[in-house]
Image (cartoon, rainbow, N blue to C red; front, side):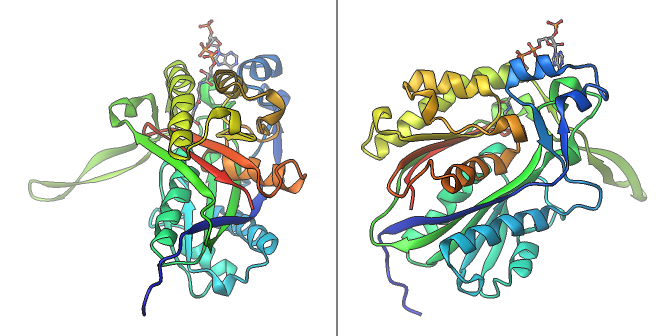
Length: 332
Ligand code: UT7
């Protein structure tokens, strides 16, 4: 097959999904020593949606993907590639192929990408590389996470923050590239600030030989360190992505950040001088949904007609790894 080079990509549809069960701050304060007042004022969160027992991450991701394909009027059978950004797959071997099967995207190759709360931005940029070199023309990028699976419900420093959800965008090859600029970073030296670690016990196997048998431990986080990191690095990485796009912060029409903490959103917007009505925030209803948070916020703002075709969107993900990144794109 001769592969023809296309100039770029267009973001032509979005979708999202959330579990139907919501847990309010009030309810959570019956479980752990916290209060609605503390959670609201320190984070902006009022409730979070939780995947119930028996719930499937792949199903949530597929629901978001289906909605995005519908908005884009794209048949699942024409999708070339599905990238599922998640840290909480149903299957450690990956859940993307399950999503592909559920969507009936029979031609698509599908794989998982793990970059925690930066996952959606990293997946979007990864997808763009396959499209810019002309290999794939129709791509579905999904961010989906169920951090509630790995939350320590006795740790008030973390359990109040997280929720479950999924969001998706459809990308199509286009002569005019709407991914205007991006910048990605990792710093493993700060890995210990935010972890969901595997802890192994030695299991004797044969004479003098052991193997590991263990499980993943609940999320631990140094909230203050991560807060400091986010407030410093996020404006910086957005400015670098804007520079690559030959734009400045004054050109941002919508700021769609990873929904970690309303105070982080406010601080980043302040630093970039983006007015608060241009900052998309839905964390009051969902909390921090990790890789899902950016496409979930984007989809809501597209569906209620805040974000219009042609609008310039600055998005940024940040979190475990540590990882952080920004993508500047024109919607539609
Ligand atoms: O998606 C990955 C990215 N993650 C993030 O971006 C998270 C970044 N960090 C944060 O958002 C904030 O650091 C938190 C919301 C996690 C914490 O807010 P903070 O203002 O940094 O609070 P703190 O950890 O300094 O705790 C202040 C006080 C402490 O009490 P003392 O020592 O002052 O008596 C905590 O024990 O608040 C206490 N506290 C709580 N009280 C009631 C901590 N968590 C809670 C709680 N309810 N849930």
